[in-house]
Amino acid sequence: MNIFSRLFKIGEAEANSAIDKMEDPIKMTEQGIRDMKQDLEKSLEALAQVKALAIRAKNEQDEFQDKAEDYHNKAILILKKVEKEQIESAEADRLAKQALVKKEEAQLQATRAKTEAAKFNESVAQLENNIQNIKSNISNWENELKTLKARVKVSNATKNLNKQMAEIDSTSTVSMLERMKEKVAQEEALAEAYGDIAHTSKSIDDEINQAADSSDVKANDDLSKLKEQLGLNNK
Image 1 (cartoon, helix red, strand yellow):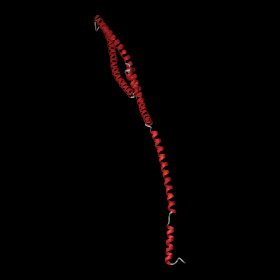
Image 2 (spheres, helix red, strand yellow; image 1 turned 30 degrees about the vertical axis):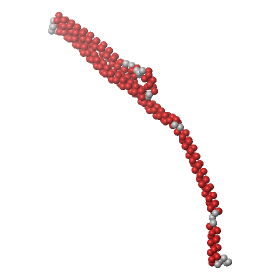
Image 3 (cartoon, rainbow, N blue to C red; image 1 turned 90 degrees about the vertical axis):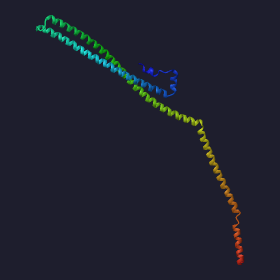
Image 4 (cartoon, rainbow, N blue to C red; image 1 turned 45 degrees about the vertical axis):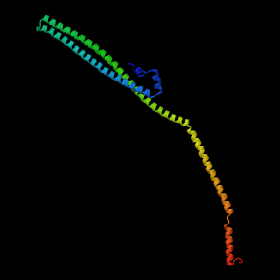
């Protein structure tokens, strides 16, 4: 059971392509974790079955051991009945001998069951060790997957930001802004120049109008005419 070999069992071209696309390693890792969890389920089922066999073998061992002891005790009881003249010696020997044969058979069965139980227990220990390794691998890979997903998010965010910055530079947006600043400065200077021109033109007109103003002369003429009408010129 080589989980890692199965996890990365892809062609060289696919592997190179997976390096370029971060989604592929994530999918591969997720699939690997699913495979390991399936292996874990199978191992747990196998562990339960082997444990059941170990328990059954231990029960058989105890059962046959009890039978062996029971036949041994029966042989003793039969022989003691001879002393009490409750059974003939020849019959007692025959039955006691058969009891001892049964005892030996039960003892052999108990030994066999004990050996089987020991083997099953060894298998149980191996399966439990494999299960712990699978659980540890699953935990490690799940942590690696979390880290990988976080790295993908950071990588994508950085890539998008760098791409935007690259696009800004490629479209000369910064240069456009600089030209816009220059144009605004030029327009502001031009507006100020027009303002100065307007102010200068207005001042000349005022001087011309002032120089050409005849309101005072007309007023004096009108005053003289009025005095003449009133006969006040001489005065």
